[in-house]
Length: 250
Image (cartoon, rainbow, N blue to C red; front, side):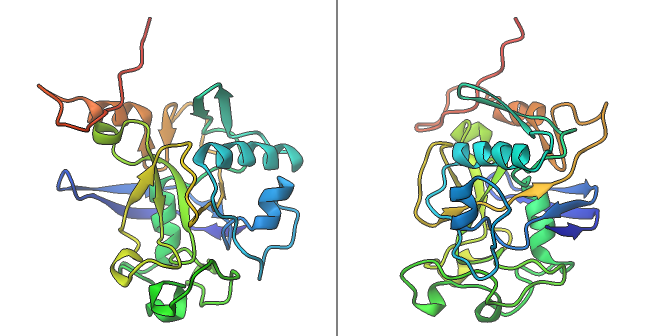
């Protein structure tokens, strides 16, 4: 795990044509994605540098893996899971998925450009003409010592993709080994259903408990309450939209 300093980062919503600045407290992030060996073992205590990343990871499986790895290391589990319902416990110190703001902040490596360096030097992408994921840590790291945030495999985040349009679909970031140059940038957003299994999607974990008494519905740039506010639609819903439904207070 690599220490990431606190600071502010900007998140853009292309569909809504908005952007917002997010202030973050310090946190830790994996210097590479979770390896296939680590994911199979259910914990971090397996050599990762030079290994292949885990692929075909479902969002729900990533959540369960985080809890399993936390229990293995004697940490507080970051998620309360009740059937299909998953709730983040911000005060827990265990492994969890990064928020989009945390992922963007860690990926930029203290620069504001779409990438922290030349694409061919920092990421596996379509420019390399590959047909499968590559071993991690072979391209250049960013200023924080983090490898492969761009290219190789997309990485699940905690955030919903667009709660007004796609309901509970979750976000992944970073681009994969077969993605074109325009797609392998910090600002690109994609996502899918929590149970979707995609061959070029893996996971990178973070750690960082938030102060008790604050951020009761999230933190680090994400809020369940704000997601549900954004999902509210006036009038008829456009064809194909399945916005996040309000949570019952009964």
